[in-house]
Image (cartoon, rainbow, N blue to C red):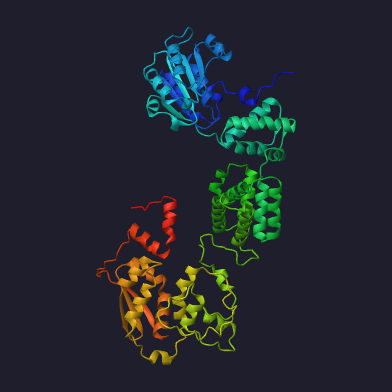
Length: 599
């Protein structure tokens, strides 16, 4: 029984013409040999399995060939070529820098360089994985690399160019090897299959090429494995079974379920994917790639970017005709967000299932109207669907909803004060004896149980809520307001923030307050201060109405940049002192942990 040789070695290129996918580099090297402009040192860099060492061996063989062809290829028959093919050449040295990375190894190499070649014109030194050399070894090698003898040529190969010293890079002619594209790998595998008398489906070879990610050696290793598995007949189903690949058919089925809105079968299909051992994050990335392919398939000029067979491109084109481009783009956004959140999630399966339901809602066929359908939506900002389908029971925070729900019976008047009391996240600070809210007892206890809204959303909408349905009677508007106690009330309100929010306390203390008719006007010095007060405008207005017993009072905030304010900036020591007054145990905590105050 003959000894088996893997395809990566058996079919390793031995001429520039047979190198796969690096035409620009091989053409440059052949022209350099033809013109005699051969650099003293080369650096071949690029990902694994793309032909760096192979090209270095071919270059070393060709420049020593005694009878090169007109196309600048080695003849393969002269004494130098035969010695190279039999691994007996005395002029070509291959050194593995991963195991010879010390200064002593470089000194030994330098000693060898001094001896001229016995056969041929050049002594060629191929140093693989050169980035593994130590800094000291690089420095020892530097002088020889810069000024070698005329007969010495150095070819360095590495996958990590950034680890090589700049002084080495500046002395080399650098060639960047690219990843081999899918079509070139497929053609090379077909050539090998024909030479070996094997049958292989083109789609099966394409899957191997895509799995190899531009590395021909990886593709050949998988090809050998599949030949052994399939007994000489490589099929598409065998490839996806052995390599454990989620094939296109799964993603086509998921998209069909999205279009139908069949969330039940969609979740069952996802469970089937997990049962087969596929990683959920890998599935999300594949779904994202599927949406990209559908988007590219909608225009004929972009279909070649898919790198797949014409039959599969046609299938993508048929399904993409049913999918709106914006929906596909939103689906890609959701998949990308899920991929970023996957690692931090404690329940990864639930995260992906939520993603699938959200995508189903994007396609407009979901049975869940409350699923977020806008991927740009942020927390605390409800979607239009949620707002439109919220319960229409009487609400203290939305009097209009109560009116539309029961037009036959007029609801009791709800004052803005009661709306603030029911909807605000915290009660207004007490500044005077607070009268009981007149409408609180008339509100059903479960009336506030509607679609969940964030605190910030409620605060931002209180002012518009009051303007939409002000429950202010004509008598309230006609009755004058006594503003004689307003300065004391305002100071008490500002003092309530001194401990919990010193920054807001300073703004309230230095704001100019003016009252006229039924309006209180606050004047601050800049936009930042105005924005901070706008966030609490509803709370401030409600507190003033309660303290002044004036339901018709309104609040305006304006900016006057001419105001000169001397707002105190608290130092770290002052903050610590304030915290210490609230909790004396803080000192013991600081001393126990030996903490210090940042200056």
